[in-house]
Amino acid sequence: MADAFRCTRQVEFNDTDMAGIAHFTAFFRWMEEAETAFLRTRGLTVLGVWQGEKVSLPRVSVACDFANPVRFGDVVTIQVVVEKIGRTSLSYVFEFTKDEQPIARGRITAVFCQNVAGEGLKAREIPAAMRELLQGS
Image (cartoon, rainbow, N blue to C red; front, side, top):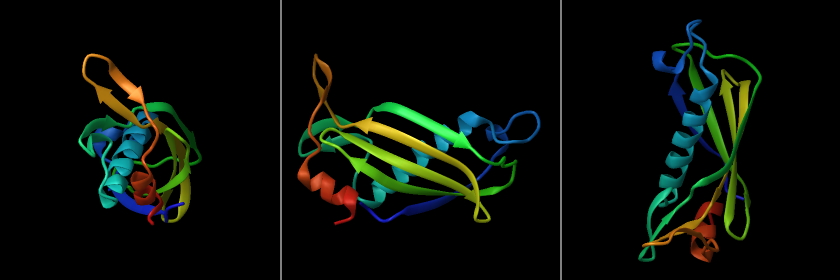
């Protein structure tokens, strides 16, 4: 699979609860932001055009387990790894750390879909060229 991609982000005030601790929902936004940044480094996107077709990667499963809190002002490192590429689906693992200490571990599974006019989303096989880009080949 692809090498790990890393990015950082600072915990903003709007990411926190009344105690100043990052609210659990912030982690889901951060996973999506990290996924988008990872895909951009590969010349891909979660919503766009691939070989003349409108395509997207809607989520079919998301999860996050929490180990330690982070607070307003903390800097979090997010590591993204492509865990599995199936026929039509793609799964990522997200490792959140602060100063190399584990904070949380998340997962997203998305399905590669074509946006068909008048019919909506239709799952389709992930093209070989896209697989190569995702794997870093």
